[in-house]
Image (tube, rainbow, N blue to C red; front, side):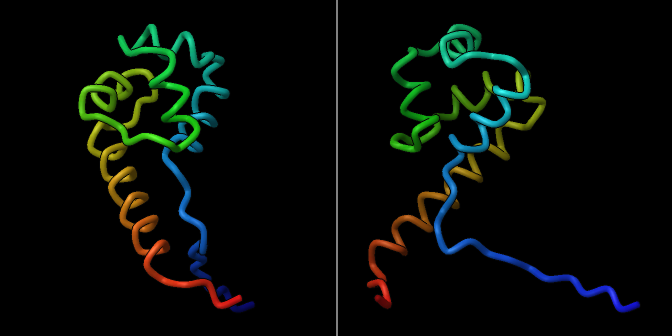
Length: 95
């Protein structure tokens, strides 16, 4: 048997909020509870989850102990997402 490693890169950027939503679902935390635990507003948390706003360093730092994922990871994820969005906006679709 031959094992091959296939690398798949999505054509659509995935917002950090999407992964964060999965994480809080697994942890049984509501967006309102996340806002309270990270000392941020509910509207900011919902915007992050919707992918319509960037993660701040303070939010990433407060998120880290809840998700057990480093603040650096969340900020890197957000940076990569933002760069992919910008690139997508510059490149026309092939449709």
